[in-house]
Amino acid sequence: MAEVTKVSKKVRTSRDQTLKYQILTHCFFKDIQVSNADLDCLGLLAILGEHELTDFCKIAVTNNIFKSPQSARNAVNKAAKKGLIIKNGKSKKTVAISKQIEIPSGMVLLDFKVLGE
Figure 1 (cartoon, rainbow, N blue to C red):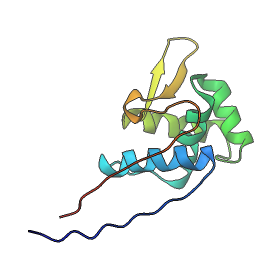
Figure 2: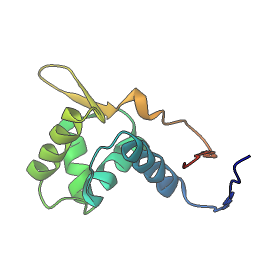
Figure 3: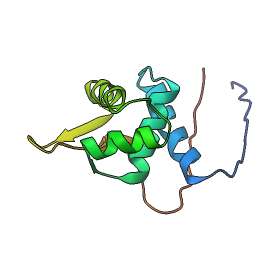
């Protein structure tokens, strides 16, 4: 029988950090490259929920994630192409986190069990 070493770690974090960790884990297992700014942007969208695109880009600038609304919009478009963000609408587009990432509401306990062979 093979011997398995188990590493357990319990950490209490803020909701923001937990959501970013969840998104980062999703990206890691799907082999999707994201920058820190992209991760911050996705985390902000996860916290805010579905939002109008122009307003969200302005909020991302206000939160010092990006320097201009255009750079925020570019990051949103890049994340949408990677399947991390869903864009809806024609004239007033809205953006939301992809349902694949499964962002729950309320307090969150992430319980990942990974076996590396």
